[in-house]
Each structure stands twice: as C-alpha cells, then as structure tokens.
Length: 240
Image (cartoon, rainbow, N blue to C red):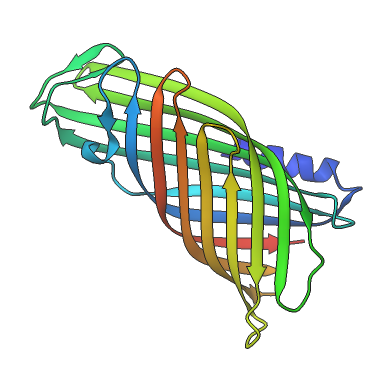
C-alpha cells in the first residue's frame, strides 16, 4: 500500500505542468466475496468456503487537467478475504486432494490497479459527466490449506476498460451529489465495477462519499474464475 501511494504521488508531481487540481480519495469498503474458482481440480464455491467480510482499502488519485480533455485517474484496491469451514465433500485444488470432514482454511487476495484517461463535461447546475478509457490490472491468488497441506493458485491479467461517472446535484440542494460510476471491460472476459453513492463537502476541500460498490471478475484464461465482491463503502477525499 505504501509503494502504491508513493507511486501515485510521484506521478502527480511529474504531471504538474498539465494538472490544474489533484484529488486524493481514501476508501474503506466492507467486502463480502462469493462466486467460483477452478484451477486443475474441483469447482470451488467461494460462498461455501466461509469467507468472512473484510474492510478493503482503496486509493484513488484524480488529476484534473487545465482543460476538459486532459484528465487522468489512477486507482488501487486491495481485496482480502479468508475463512475456515469443514469440507462437506472431497475437493481437489491444483491436483492436491482434500478430504470431506477436514477443517479447511481458504484465502483470497486481489490487487486491482486502474489507469484511466477521461474527458470531463464542463460543470453546470445539475450534472457533471466524465467519460474515458484505460487499462485495469488484476493480480490475485487463492489458497487452500488443511494443517500442513496447502496449495495456492496465482493469476494476473491486463485488460482494457471503459469508464463513465455521473454526478447529479438535486435542484433542492447544492451541498449533496448523487454519484454513479461504471468501469467495464469490452472484452469477452467480464470485469465490471459499479458504484452508487452520495457525496458532500464536509470542510473546505475535504469531501465525504458513502455508498455501495459491486465488483465482478470473470475469466477462463488458464483457470476459471467468477469472483464477485460487494458491500457498503465510505470514503474521504482531499482536493488541492
């Protein structure tokens, strides 16, 4: 996390000549994860593995340019869920056999990094619009462990993404915005990151955003994964 933060701040400094303002947002996301995973063995139902909800950190660096056509957004999200549960049936993972009745520990880790270029619509009284495209990188692993017997599947993938963010200011208030954001891959692999939230300024250039986020990663590139993480989140932002 420290390396990611230093990298984002370095990029911000290097791009100072074209950047008019910078906004840093730190998010805490209560993620519950479910779906399936398979690699050289059984189809593993993540919901049956007893993965517990965890607070996942997320960091976004928003670099707004000197005009509406030069804007960049960089983001990092860390998802980590683990759980323990007795196997209801025999299971195989990476060719390693795990027997029914054994107490199994499962660990899922996902690192998600975004680099997005976007165009912003000039602000008006009701709607702010951002539309862009970029690249998302997912680096993940799934581990199965019973006593001293364990195995881990590691995977990573780059893919293009489209980006849309709409902030609506209700006519009866100027201090509150309704935020809707979509990040989606146009490829055969499904990757969709959706959020809806309410955002307000709480002090000078400090903002508060509270809402719901849903992220789905689905691919069969050497392994089969359909991993969904979702839950409520809260975020603080600072603009300078």
